[in-house]
Length: 217
Image (cartoon, rainbow, N blue to C red; front, side, top):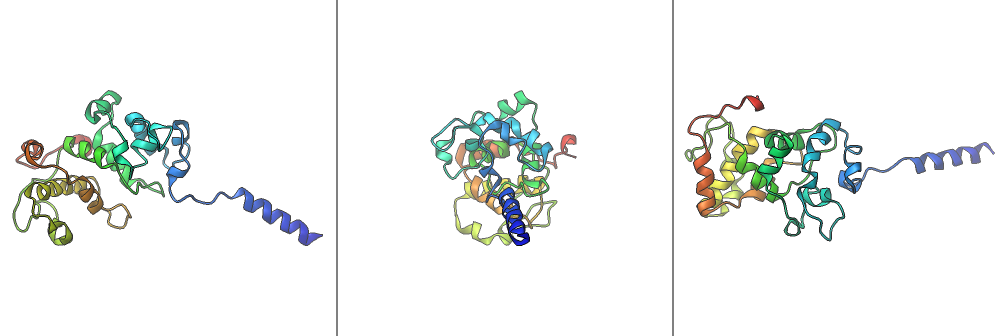
């Protein structure tokens, strides 16, 4: 009898324990579930402003699925104009971006929307002077993009190379944690899309001297 009782207790406890999903996104299907399923409530509150940036698609009934679940199906996602949207919500792009990848606990984003990345990267000031010298190393950093990640030099398109370097500077300023599964190289590869006039427009916005931004200090 005692054995049966213990077995029933064990089965009850097993039924009460919810196994960890492969990702937090398995738990989040609606906006009202967003803040309750992240370990960091502060992070959730900051990211909630991005919830409605996508348009519904066949992959989900809620915008979060499409704009922040961070999609392999990115071509099915339509993002609103990021700069004006974040400004209307009073959100600092890099602060949101930084918290998304540096938050404590298990809620680190494994992927980020390339389209959203591209928009945010284009808006955020760089805290390191951009230069193309010494095998494309950067002033103020201890890392060289093409020494650290030689595979990225396979492209001979100057625009793409410059784009990757720009993104690397921005990402390096946002976080520097190579222990995470979410690494700078993934962002660089995912956002190396600027060429021609677009690239020149971005380059023209990079300050000649190291940028000081009190908000990010």
